[in-house]
Structures are given as C-alpha cells and as structure tokens.
Image (cartoon, rainbow, N blue to C red; front, side):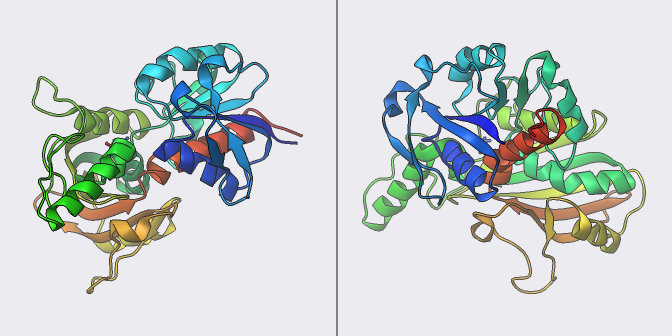
Length: 341
Ligand code: 2RA
C-alpha cells in the first residue's frame, strides 16, 4: 500500500526532477496528481522513465483532501496561498520555496543531517526544504562537525544558472549563441552578462551589503546543523547549466588532519569523496549532473587558522539541492510518521 502524492509545480526545473526522482526511487505511490498554475494546466508531463504521463491540473481548483503529501516547487507567492490550504486539509506539504524555512514551527530538513527535527512537522503540517547551496554544504559539514565541531565556515559558491529556473538556462544559452555569431548579449534575467562571465550577486541585496542567498546560507546552516556555527558566504552565479560548486574553509574546535577528514568523509552518508590529488582527480559540476551525491574533493589543511580545513564540493542543485532532498524528506516522513501497511 502506498501514498496519494501531489507534485505542485511539475512543469518547472525542480518539479520535473521531483517526478524523475520519485520514479527512480520507486517511491510507494498509489495515486499521483500533478498540479501547477493555470499557465500549465492541461500540459502533459512524464513520470520519469516509467512511460506514464500525467495531465497537469490547475492548483487553484485542486482539492487536497485525502491526499497524504504534496511536494511543492511553485515559488513563495503561490506557496503562501496554497501551502496552508493543503496543510489544513491534512496533506503534509514539503516545500521547496524559502517561505517557511526560518519559521520556528516548520522543520527545515536535510535527512543526512537533522532527521529527528522532522518530528516537529505536526505544528503546521509543513516541512521546509533548504536552499540548494546550503543543502550540499551541510551534508559535507555534518561528519566533520560530529568529529571535531565546526566553529566557523567561509564559503564561496559557484552556482549554476538552473538555480534561477528555466529563464536562467535560456539566457545562458542565448547569450552564448549571440556572442558566437557577433550579436549583442543583453541581460534579462541576470543583472549582467552571464555567458563567459561570473556575477557576484544572487537574490536581492540586504542592508549590510550581503545578498539574500548569502544570508540563507548563514541562517539555514545554523538551523539545520548547529546554531553556534558561524558562516560567511559569497554567492556567485557562473556560466554552468546544472551543478553548484563551493569552495569551503572550515575552522574546527578540535584537531582533525586532512587525512582523517578524508577517511570520515569517505564513510559519510550522502557524500562521495573523489580526492586523488592529481590531474583530474576531483569532481566538476558537469560530472555531478543527474547524481544524488554531494561530491567532495581537494580536502587539505588550512594552516591560516588553528584546526583549519579546506575543501571543494559539488552537487546537482536540482537534485540534492532541491528535488532529491524533498523526496528524501517524503521517504523519512513515510518511515517515521505516515506508515502504510
Ligand atoms: C539559486 N538558490 O541557485 C537558488 C535556487 N534555489 O539561485
């Protein structure tokens, strides 16, 4: 016996991956509904490679009564309207937007890091999925934190355009083509040219000069991993279609050599250590597309601080950074709370 599952936002980058991953992992589904805004109503979407297709229903008219869980990938404005409606009807919402992440009554979950926090979901019947750049970083930090207590993190991200949705991907493609044929590369979605360039700006600016993306990495890491961990982030958009990369420097409370960190990371859930210390012996974003893992490479001592470590990590931002984590939350919710015979 399985679940009655809704995927909301099924025509976007993340919603499509949610369907792919539910199918790949053979999530126990008795009935599946795919919903989206009126713009996509009537479109057909594939349920992964199962050969099954589903017609997109209008979320405005969808009655969630009797449905077990809904995976939301519809953005904060639509989530504000529909998440409380679904939750009140008894359908647990697993939300990929940023709307509820810092709500104290909503657990923010990365199953490899803080699975027990899911038990608090009953306060609102909503569970939040973290920001993509946070998710992969905390998967890599968790085993180091358990071994030697992470005190401070300095992270610079190299985030792919798919994090900005299909429009971001289209803009990189069109600008690259235009530059090749000698046309102008006008920015639309991004603030500056993204093709053959990098932009140190993701999401809106805050009063202190940081961006909201950077703020999310700070506060979400505290909520998921440990409120005592200090984080400073610089988030950068790069001309890569899928796969976010991060350069991470960590200051630990206790001594941990790079070699011991490698051994710990090799065994850690959700982590794939690829660290050969030779040409090509590390992972780049194009190699992580379609995968589940957070790949860690370039682990080394950072001698500029006591007990310092540096590493590189890469993950598919549409998967571990969004859809996969949401499906893992659904699996955890099923195992711990919504057991089916
Ligand atoms: C980005 N953080 O990469 C966003 C997506 N969640 O822009």
